[in-house]
Image 1: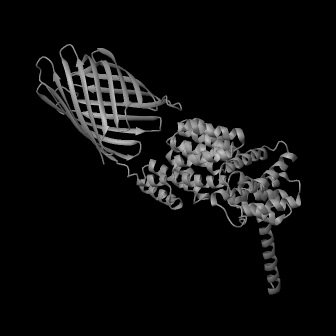
Image 2: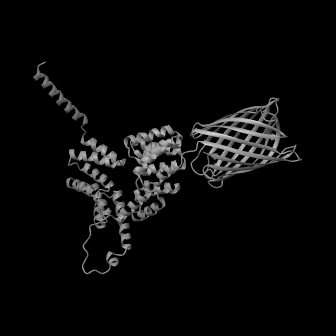
Image 3: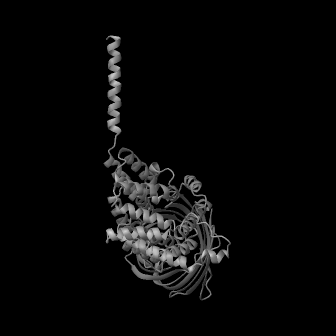
Length: 586
């Protein structure tokens, strides 16, 4: 090929490539406008400004683009840029009332209530159904009354020889109050933030933004019913307010109503699939459901798009900690704290010590028998290890004395939580040279949280336990289903258990146990109950009636003290049992 022809082909190819690239990368004004409005509605304001600025460059006389750009700048508190956009829109379309309403909002924020009232009234005059303009007029009236309640500047400053020069309007009282409240909320000082938000609501009655903020701070203070009322009130003022709908989803999540929270979040993500807040809540729901891997992946997906999203970093840390990777969790929390150095919430997460994976249990019981019989003892020491959250492997050695004889039993056990609602365990035990205990035992059971309503009542937990004991000359099997229901935010639990035992000779026995557990404080728990059930004694089923009670007290995060007492009646004798134990976590 000749050099000139080759050069010509190369140049033509380059031009075609450039032209093709420009066609591939070009976006129309309508596309940029549509994407910019969507970003604004989803509160991705910086992205919205970028998209709408590009649309404005392509179509500088498009009033719709200018109005949307103005409201986006207003959301970012860039009042100068917002005013310029609204004024340009009105110059192009003098009857564009939304642009006039934007200017009214800027005047209100600048405490220029006369101008704000004039503009808002003009909007209502042209569009009598403009609800936001009507609400702004109400807010202006409330703000004017609040200002009138304060002494005028002259009264505060005293007499002056010359009239003061009119100062440039500064931030309004409402805007200043909201800024202070927002700062307190970010610092985790929710009670103080709530006080300021209530002041802001008095200045601007029915303000949906303030109502949503109040809902959030009420929820962070565990006042979930109050939070729900605020979010509902915001939706009454602005039915399409996305943050208020997501606020209700947060309330459902705080209440433990995971199904309700997921329904609310799914409705939002169906309409706004890229909404970050909704995706964060969806990840939180997965985490609450015990799906730690899924939650971690969801938080990672958010961070891929928004690397500086502190809430996603905290959520990722929570998922990693729930999975047992405390080192990775601390790295995520550290990144979040770098973005929000004043956050008490993140600081508390970092201050939390690494989880203790080992536990040892030491306990002893002394039983006094009536009729001058020799006392019994039952002592044990156990060691358990949790390699990952939800799975525990342990062993125990038990030394029991009865009638002057001693048996030593060795037991192994594994517990595993398959989900937040279902867990199971299995045990094997053996007693070399057994005199009265079973030579070999095998057992297991499962627990299912069958019903978990939102609120103070519930959940309902169903359990099923089974055990087979082999003695020197017989074997005994026991099956015991139980149901336990909790009240008062799980502070009180009531349980009923049925016990059915039978041996290989065809003898059967049935009984029951009634038990109540009460969390008196965060550290102190007590229990009490009554049983009329068979006990396996040297391979024989013995009818017993027992009244029992006990307590546990957390001396620290690492130490728990336990105590118990039981009075047992059987035909041969009565038995009083006293027990004491200690659990150490490390």
